Amino acid sequence: MNCQIIRYEEIDSTNSEAWRLIDSIRLEALSNTAIIAKRQTKGRGQRGNGWQSDLGGLFMSVILQPNLTAANAHQITLWSAWGIAKALNETGANVKLKWLNDLLIDRRKLGGILTETRIEAGKIRYAVVGIGINWTNDVPEGAIALGELPTTLSNIDELIEVVLKGIQLGQTRSDREGMVGILAEYLELLSDKKVHQTINGRELQGQIIDIRPTGELVVRWEGNSQEAIYQPQNFSVGYQ
Image (cartoon, rainbow, N blue to C red):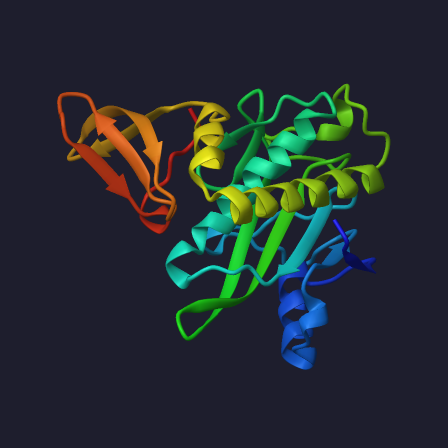
């Protein structure tokens, strides 16, 4: 990926810095700029959660200007996750996905993606794709660090190259072919297609059967022949 890289020893959030750059410069040349920090003091995850950002991890945000409408904003996360997983798997990692934005190995969290967008006239003017991946950092319970596993990667700079390659792969394929092929492969990369939900004290079990191009999850619950459709902001798959 032909990308300008800006590095920091420590910063509050690479996503926040990306938006500061956009607001201060607003030049087309900012597209395909990556901001990388060795440590974040206020890293952000999905749904307003914090992102643990200790030394040794990869914390990066990439500024993009995709040709997408606001309704298709979730495609950026989908093709980024697919592309990064595919690129990492070429190094010998066995990366799986959890809808919408998590990277897993052996059902343990390897990393995640936080995509933020700015909309103008119904179209995405800028997108900032934030990526956090555990490399050699200490990880919380239930997570995993890539640097401890047998891959062809020998340092974090090689990991950065692979992640940028994955984002480019996803964006290029989406631009050329649309999302149909990517979504079919995304479904195959899901770590688990089973989902659970508790309603009025009753636990329901279901199966993920599709992901729509606009990002919605399609689930078929046991005992119900109709498909249920969930927006990313309204439903969490959780960890099995």
